[in-house]
Amino acid sequence: MINPMKYKRTVRSGLADCCSNTSNEVDIAINPLPGSPNAGPDTTIFSMEKIYHLRADPVFPGETGLWTVLEPMSGVIEDISVNEAEVRNLSPGENSFLWTVSKGPCHMEDW
Image (cartoon, rainbow, N blue to C red; front, side, top):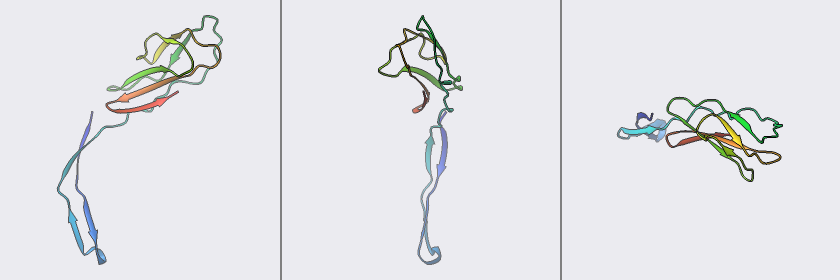
């Protein structure tokens, strides 16, 4: 939800602020940042099936989450929009995933 606020600006100048002027009131809407995302701890995986279960902190009401496989790795995420998702077909070696939490136009990330 956008937080509407009203602002005025006052400018002062001169010796002992002898001159001042205050602007008209202006409405400003501020989009709050989403909660701090946590994609979970870094983990060493030993899986012959090349499967892992991603476990990020859940999003707060009004937020959305999105998993992304970071290049050049490969993997298929079962449902990219849930915080606890299964990823299959992992690349050999190190794999990295990005958890992006959005609220309106604001985004925060953790990998």
